[in-house]
Length: 178
Image (cartoon, rainbow, N blue to C red; front, side, top):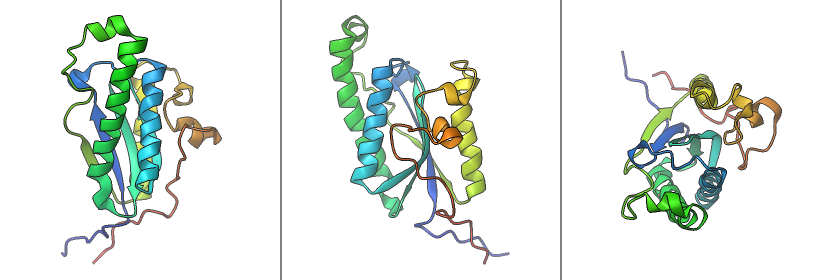
């Protein structure tokens, strides 16, 4: 039996990264909006597409696609770097008492990220369900569409999600049998 061959440019990435020490640094609406803003900016800078996302109080999930998959590390590094700079500024000005409890040398994000290659629309659908239901599972909202910081409302009602969403319809190939 031959190993399956996966075309390099036709797959999506399920990515996760967390706040430093799993702190709830994204509790405020302002913080979540900053993360969404820089997700959108980096997708635009690198001609990427977002299939879905969720911003949680202490971590982020997204499913993204690039025509050139070698851009993933740069994409994540820039998204984290740019959002981190802005988040630190917001904590110092909007939440000075909370900011005073943090070590200014501590980063906003854990140093690494988790990435999982997705080669089928069925797996994308499964991962979308997982990320959209994350706020429900954590007890933040009763229904996934009640969480304002995800793509769930876009998929359910085509309501704006804060960034353009590219649904997974025939854009991402399934593994080729050899």
